[in-house]
Image (tube, one colour):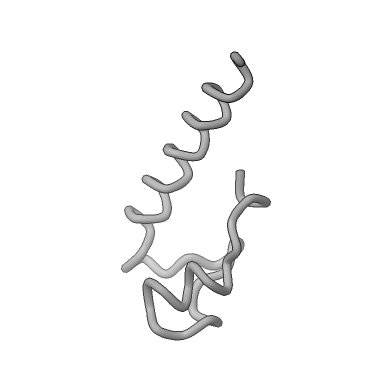
Length: 51
């Protein structure tokens, strides 16, 4: 799922800087939001594979 995310844009929207959040380095401050996003993407993947 991490391949689907544009990490630069996600980082820019959450932190205001495109370099703060990366797939291999997620600051503790944003861990819950990113975990929720990954769960939503996993649910979307399961849903779209049924079609």
